Image: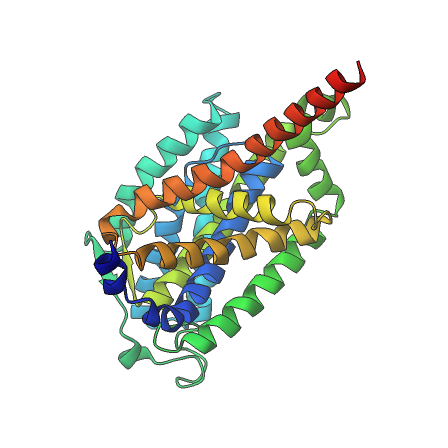
Length: 319
């Protein structure tokens, strides 16, 4: 056992943390999209696994075609919105349960993503060819794993802007109607809210944000892969749950709740890096992710059981 711990190279952990922070921030944008459906609409949308890869595919192909990276990201966002519209229409117009509608969209997007990337499983946009934003007249990458401090700064700025926009939108009449739809559909319908429309808007907005995150991750990695979105829903849920468990009692304002989701993604990548330093195989990443999510999901349940047990003991004492 002593030899095992001696073999672990924890000295390299601090060097890995900046990259983990950068990836956590970029995945945090995706988690914000998951939060919209999972918490606000109360819908389990599995189409995000496909729309994340769609955002990456659109971004890499447009950059290769000569588009500025920022314009490619906007196009990725719009394509993600279309993917969310497909899920929403399958659910509301065809009466397909939301979870099955998401699976169908995700399944279809696999072929769509292959088509976008010229029937190739992956495509690469070299940083040497296109450069960074400030090196190529504003056309180069916004983020890259080769410039991690800049990626952290730009990722933080984009996250702040997105959180501010979502905070503003969900304070509008339409945004409030969308939140009401997820909270109490029957009461919302009685108040004259078109809940089908709200669901479609929510799913479109969610998948647009997820696709934007996919485009940023493609720039960070320099490549897009048809399977890059596999398991994205689990990572998004991990960020949401971690943020709620750690900051749930501290962050009661809606804007702060959105911030907690982004911080949750960073914490998830911190934990992931620490676990990987224990010498586990990278092929076990999905197993590790599932265990992390299960652990944080169980914490509120354990707290509730402990509180309930203490309350029962107090009642028996005073009886």
